[in-house]
Length: 193
Image 1 (cartoon, rainbow, N blue to C red):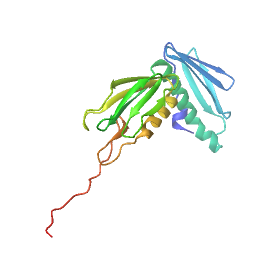
Image 2 (image 1 turned 135 degrees about the vertical axis):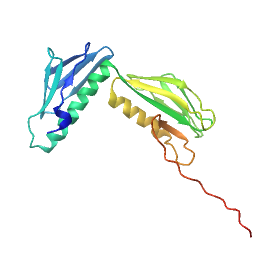
Image 3 (image 1 turned 90 degrees about the vertical axis):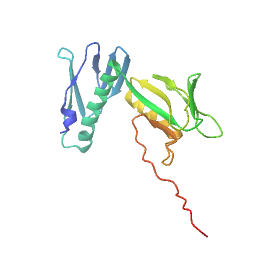
Image 4 (image 1 turned 180 degrees about the horizontal axis):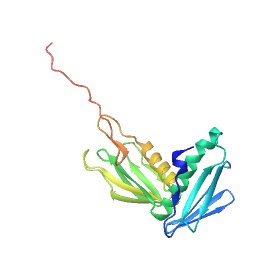
């Protein structure tokens, strides 16, 4: 049995969880999310007690054991998403690097000969705090927020993949809480000929 799968999900006030066959609908102050459950996983919604319980009816099946904790985590993320939402802070390091929002797209200037554009998916909001870097020490900062944690994580990963941080000077796009392990560059010694 999965330790995570056995935990009950508490439904906060203002959030409504409904089960329609295998489809789970979660609605709250920020919007509505839905997902289809795995056929071997049983979800019980107790609206009066404000709880959701995920059960594995086939504990001998390897796939059902895998999906037990995963299903519970996905439903818990949906409940948290429609009530509070999720956000990811990102930073852009490098001289001359900048980011701006233009007609539902994020436009990056990150050291290439061209601008890199990424369309902002529906349901994601972008807030640019500092749009351009100041030298190599002060980064450009922006925050991505959404109620769907999977969509948010995938969009943040796509942005980071444009220019991952390099290990020598740390230039590139990174998460705000990411640690970049730095390497020492070539050391020149003064030798006599």
